[in-house]
Image: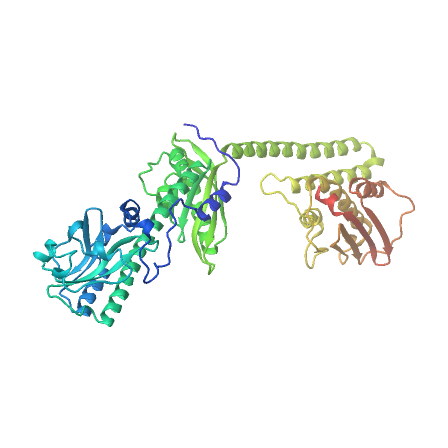
Length: 531
């Protein structure tokens, strides 16, 4: 299967996906407790409305809950009762989530005391069940467990739905009911039961939101044309989208891992990738690396991996999100262009050599042209060196003026303590500007070697580079040169300088001959040098 890729910034899209907060379609659940002393909401008393609210608490998981068990035990001790229960009233039964002194886990709803208690607005107290017409013939009264006394605090959900009661039972009647402290304590314990139930419901809602969010995120990640991945703070992969498994042929049943991914990385690129990834993990800076990955059909494809760190409020990296983009076609086109450029560069260099050789050959039998031919040959060779600088065959191309000056001035000795020193700003240099600059500095150096500072061992040349707004100022200053004066007529070299400065670089040049040597100031537009 052929997978098509795009070159959009899917990494940023993936980052936004994983960072966004999903708005979920879940029924809003009130968080404030139902007001004390207020009866349940009449609109929520019918089972058709009440039971869905009860289902939202997921009470199955709360049977024998340790916290509820402690509440019932304390309720029994507080009220001096042999039994206490957290009772949930369902459609056909009342179920005891926690119980103390009671063996049964449930009883039928028709005999439920709590079914009555949950509908009230306060603790329901039955001093003697045998004397209460509601319960006198109740099987729980006339038989086991022989209930004579009952007290139940209603359990009402935050939205006002009655769901059960926290109750205590006794086998003996209590004509005086509960003391004020016991009744208040039962309400406090009832509130603790509701906090536990509401906490359970919030957990269920959060789990549902998380599951829905994860499903949506997975669907969004799978829709990205690139391969999407994530890793934990330590750099261990913990997610790949569907494109990864389609591309590599790795089974989706295999858990995401670095080692599993490295198995399909090209052996020659593996170490460099790991080093770059380790560097990004250590620095917390965005990650980017090109390498080859084995596709499911066995072919190797160049990929670009990018990753962004996610930080917490303290600035610590907690997660990485990124993409893998297939750049194989572009990579191969780039390789072809580089190969062609190197071939053209080699041929151009040969042309410089051929032209220089032809000039010297033609001048061999013309003594009057020997000096001119020698100067022209040197200028052509300077152009060749400039060409090598901006289009080298074996390394990354140079793009700074100081680098070109190092190449051109090398025959004269360049650097601290040498005859030529370069100081000042770093000036970016384009390919088109390199040729006229090479001619300019070759001519200045050649004249200095013949008549100026470079003709003497103690002579020195200082080249200073400075930026002034949109202009580059270059000062050529000679010291220790023989005294000289301006030439009476402009020769070929001077004409070449003027043409290179004015016509090709749109700049200006000022010369000043002093007793210590020549000083030249070049004023060149920055944009001309950048071309």
